[in-house]
Length: 436
Image (cartoon, rainbow, N blue to C red; front, top):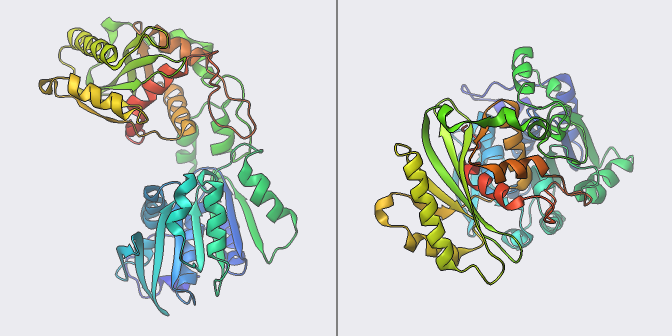
């Protein structure tokens, strides 16, 4: 495996523990290789390193690298915190296109190889990889790939001269389809020549010092599903109250308007109503000290048939004016709207005067589980607050529960709790998940 580093004077500081080395040695021989476990355990680095080593003399020219999105694939596999394919093959690789797909062209000891990068979270994503045969397939966060994509990727590697598959994932619900359809059957057969599986925790990563481990653990509520999955590396179902830390003591998170810290700017999230749900606005402030504060909310009242785009626009302008009156020095940067209602978003753009200086655009629509984990992490770290002007948001956080459908990592949406206000809040902050 070390041969891939030969000739480099600027290689990243790879450091592998014994458990990781054993997994990587087996990966050189096995067809399917699965690294599961806690965050920051080193799973992706293992797979990238072996993939790169085998690429040097791979008999196949085309290979596949995927994530939930193409951006996720490029970040986690191409860059990989400076330990990815770009760095390993530094001076021998360049980004380009292959038949309208993004690819990393790599000069290896056995000739040029093209690694096609793709996202696999959507049902129709499989169309992007049809028409090619691939030798090796490396996938990060395989549990966020759509099943149709997984099946297509398997089919695309059947004719490989040296077929290799590398998956990594953080644990999820034990009933998730990725376990039932693939991982559990593969690992139950007792066929070590076919499937190489290893489970890692953050403590298996020699790069993580005890001080850093304590710092990471401090960001988690130890009673949460995220602690059991991300730190302990356990497969466990999400159940019960979602924001238990908040529900147990909501008063700890509420700040009086007179006691707010200085804020850099504010964003507004908009969730448009449907048949029974309401259209809601949530204003989120970003303090200079970090974190987020909910500083305002509004609900467009009315039943189905009572609400039209004109009314939404009028009430949004009123909400915007109210925020400017209450916080005259606070810049309002973005209005992030539910991307599924483009005609309503266009209506807001036309209604808001250009002089307001507000950018109205689509929300990022990140996975619900990721948004929930982010807010829970802020709560645990004492970096999430709301003002007395946000009673609906407070109730939504206190009452939100997990959907008890098998394998689901989402909120129950049966109108027993207020999902709309939570969506609006998350739309306002989700693009800043890595910054606050």
